[in-house]
Image (tube, rainbow, N blue to C red; front, side):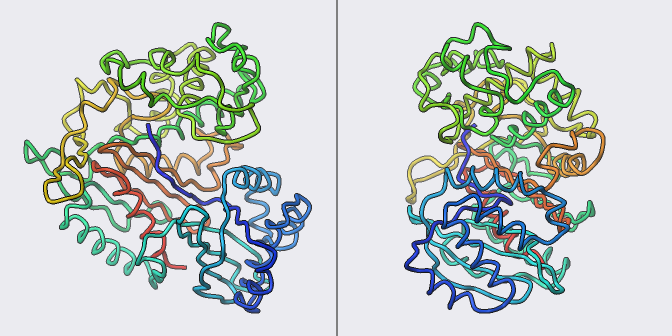
Length: 459
């Protein structure tokens, strides 16, 4: 499914001109966290692996270095550097010994908030860097003092959005597995006047890609595939011979394959009833030329995740839907998560609504039914409840379902959206918070809520 711009708990790559170095130094001050923020920006700005490696070795807290190895952090650095534009320091919001918060402006007009969280005690080593895209007027939302204040402020914020008909769905906030707030807002079916409940299931959009990643990690841990395997090893008849020979499983996962999207003119023309299996999606894109040489760039690729689904089917001997149900959802206790044919949706599934008629007074919410494929895929479009997604974070932290090498064990920030669909999940094991927002309205209805709540989290 289409995915909105979304920045989870990753190290954002920030490019600043050398001429601004002195200005950055003075504006970030002399606190420990301010110094770390300045050194991070300078290391990235150098463009040198050696400088970034040295930053991690010198400035990371010991526990943080153990939790996520420097090799993985360097891979994130490379990934984000390949995708990021140019950012300039806009404002320093706060600099303390254990925390620095800054705003940067992006090349294409977005404003991002970067927060450097450090240890409370000297030497104040770096624990995490959190990144948010912020909306106008929300640049400096202050963290609340405790969990009770978090629940109250979050509930009031979302209630106001719901009253203005700008949010409809479910919000769940938990810490350490304990639910702090779980509440439903708006209508699951406007025509039938059915309210959303905390058990309502919502379309996840591209959030399903996380399950596909787990499936690949499981099969890799079992020795049934390697991340370096090319497509042709599993799909010898793949229509694009160049892609079959050059593109690896790793490149499919990291969206560096050059394989494009399936939301194209073929998708628009295709009878949606026929899009009910992984193999049914392949003709929408698989024969098209690669957009770039595999491994040289990154570009969002729904098509690549369809190919991963086909590989999972070939290696496991099961259809994709059965594999994730038996190997992820059932072991994790996610009884309310699955992919369904849209002509046979369970009664507790929310209808998606997309705004039609422009942004003026004549705009109305209309069902998104005709835009949906018959069934979701390994790229997105399954359904789940907020409680099940909390169970997913618990499975990520546990020893049995998810391979220990799976990177999302160290934190997860994912979202998905298309017309009438928006979902966001953020889980940070460092502080224990999980924020789950499911909406049956257009993006960024859920993502906006998740971003706002992340800014409110007690530090």
